[in-house]
Length: 205
Image (cartoon, rainbow, N blue to C red; front, top):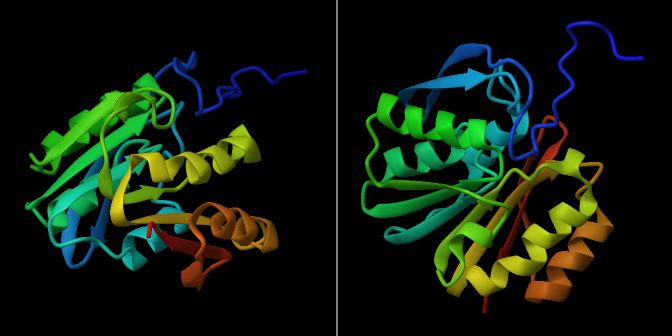
């Protein structure tokens, strides 16, 4: 039985049904101040989760070119990337229309203009495009097939020598994930590990 008033939305849905309750997160990355508008029906609405923070603090970005944030949520990763280097073009995608709306608001709030935000499932919104870097804090609660799809479909959206960088809980990022990365890319590395999370890394050759 569901408790009255309990939020039952899954954030990996196109249209959350819960009443939208807005909130705000203030945080710092790389010595810069950021403010993110959040809401019910999106992932980690009350704080920047530890996995996202580790990805942001560990990611290796190209000096120029394009970056794709898959499953962007309210935009913490993509907006931080865009703010760190205005020469990068950052594409952000999410299936959740509420998350996409929030990401667009947060791009304005944080005064970043080198971003493009689209709604759709995984790589569907960016068909025909390639990127120099793909970043993701994947929706694990949607199932491991979704996580696997982000890894296995990534090379089709990656330029030569582009990287895929994904954060997962350490208990998930084990031999199985290593095998998937190595099968698809032929290489695998761990950029960092902290607080029960790992940032996984692979490069398209």
